[in-house]
Image (cartoon, rainbow, N blue to C red; front, side, top):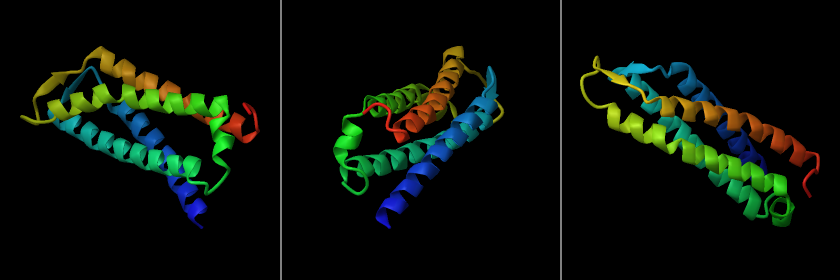
Length: 145
């Protein structure tokens, strides 16, 4: 039952991360009001929470001996690529998170120019997130061992 719960949390977290990054991408514009930035900040907080749940469930499945043996994942180069891409997405998300937190305070109607670099980082996060399920599919087929 523990394995099922962890896998379910892992899967729900993946869906939540995908939904929040898609939401950020759809809501981001070159100029936003502080109210809109505050909304993006709340979405980003859900993204961060989902990433932590994903990380916790994933690490427990990997090292906890609950599912497949640890070496099944540890010896698979595709798994390491998948984890590396997830880490890169997390690193890329730091800049937008800090920007949203800093810019959400103040007059709600005030407009703020959004750096184009921030918009491109969200796009890159989305592209990298599209690659991760392909890697998971390859792993499930035993490729990379």
